[in-house]
Image (cartoon, rainbow, N blue to C red):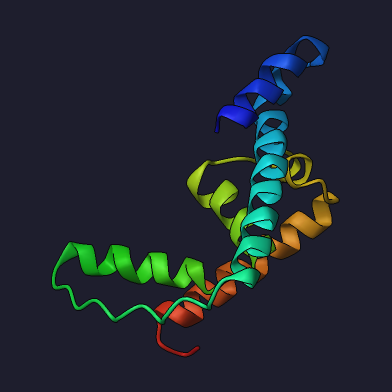
Length: 126
């Protein structure tokens, strides 16, 4: 997060349209997180693979939260990023396209496929 904020603070002066700030800031955050993930993956390749996590049995509202989190975890990284930005952060398609550095059509397609996959997983079909 600190690296992302440093990047945002360094570049905010060059932002010409304040309305594009959320998508612009998410694009910086996205790149910094991708860099960090690549570094972590390289470290994990040198270490032993982690053991599979045990299933957690929970009753009540938390069960739905876990199901949704587990469904999101089963999405591909690209679909998950688009879905989180759309459903979680409320960004528009054009903002998501800017944040993830893809065309608007690709962002729309990723949200469509993510929604379809989430529905299938939550209904027990996948």
